[in-house]
Length: 264
Length: 210
Image (cartoon, rainbow over all chains, first blue to last red; front, side):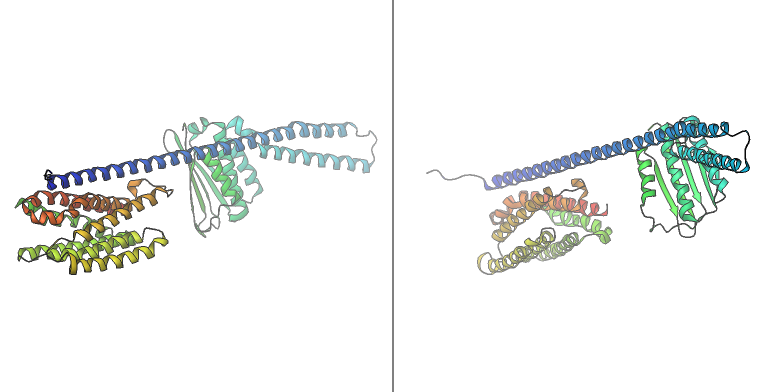
């Protein structure tokens, strides 16, 4: 029988080199697989977020369309019908009237005037015509004018981004209008403020910054809850890819800065 | 001479690489990473003692027998903190049984004049088992981060590369003790695997910062 002449030294080196290669390959394959799974999961999450965003956009768009339709119906049908009724009452006014009859006609006309005014306000609130005809600033100006007339709050508007605002798409204008409307409502309802400011600034060739401030009681940052108001603001801004920052503290008023980049 | 320079000084000094990284990020280190840091400190000190003893022409192999007990305990405790709770008791029993086996081996089987190839090889096999179990556990977790961003993955890779690649060397250590002319060529390879381990440990400690 032939004696074993294998060199243990060579065998051990080969064994070590082989094991080293095997282990390194094993780890590299494991890393590749784990990173591949992670990439797939991230892609899936991104697709899911995009899908949710599309759904949200569809909901908001259909909501806006419905508001516009109801507003137009109120204005065109109910408003016109009431105006016709008012004219009819005017025409039917008897020639020889008694004082009582006169009073009755006047009262009816006053009530119809009030209803016409209310219908117009409701239809404007549902879908402000100024927004689609004259743009965001005009619509906000109109809204501020109404608030200022009530005397409960003084809103000042500064526009330093006219050209950018003019090139803004209607869905974006609608979203920003709703956000500002919500902020004004919050100020009136909760802040006990006397003055608020809206400032539009062009921060670059294609980016706009909207700063909303009030001098109300403010709120501690830790207390800001995502109630319906803030949720609405967030969902509106998410759909248009807008970024917002809140700066508030108890007794120091409220400030929200919105940044929106056009042509995204 | 160049072998002694590489093995005794350069490789021993590279332990400072993970140690410095660990101390710089000490506040962020999790408990398992701290165990690895203490293990590195312990092995660094023991290496230093072995170098001093070797310079005084004293046998250092009995130190290796003792080092194996602590090395196994440190690494087992590291994995004990990473695995599920059901692994706790078996690992503690394993630490106790292995320590006892090392002492019996030192006294009755492979004395302080030989390498503890039996216990050293067994230790390497068990540690490879820990590493594979850790990889298995990581594969079944829905992580939100990449492989490289988890410091524990780097530590585990370092341990796996060193113990798996060195297994053949651990098995044949006593053979090379009788053929010292061959050992001069083969030990730098094991030292290089140790260098890999230290570099991966350093990356692991650095990743903990992020």
